[in-house]
Image (cartoon, rainbow, N blue to C red; front, side):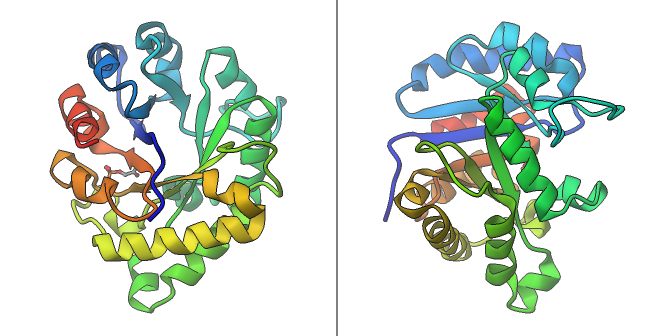
Length: 250
Ligand code: 13P
């Protein structure tokens, strides 16, 4: 069973958080100094809070974005570029979240282009994948998700750990349902093989996160499952207490 020395625990605030929520960033950052040797920690607030969060995050907590455009800059009203994220001190960006694939019709090719643009700006993309309940029930989950990742990741990696993946079964997001540890292990092992087939030995250095209703109560089991190198947390990352409860499972 492969285990990385440090897990990546990332929070995705989605479209939640006004300026008052920066208190949570401050509370998280203060406490994380106790865990610095155990993991890498990241919060991706809405774009409006990246600068404010960065000012409070200190060294123990990274701040990232939830999306970026595939082009470096230009006439794309409402979008933000990877360069803008980097300019604010962001070092990570989530790309291809299922809420963007579904709500904004993002294809694997678009997600791949976003990941490549992020890398050009020195930002680590967290490339998301995940199946619907219908696909899982039809026995198509592994085939669908591994193809998503084969097509949504850059053609090559120039250094170890340059990208991360997040496996987030759509039916487990925000529902309180989590995939069983056996299903998570089966998928993460399949994703590892996809990465190694595509990138060679460097595929072993890519962190594969699990996401979907991760909370303090289930974090210990999920984080100690085969080939699970961390978690991408939605709802439970909004409050310092629950995010730190997940961190404590390390
Ligand atoms: P929840 O943790 O709220 O299920 O969200 C998961 C997710 O989509 C993180 O990107």
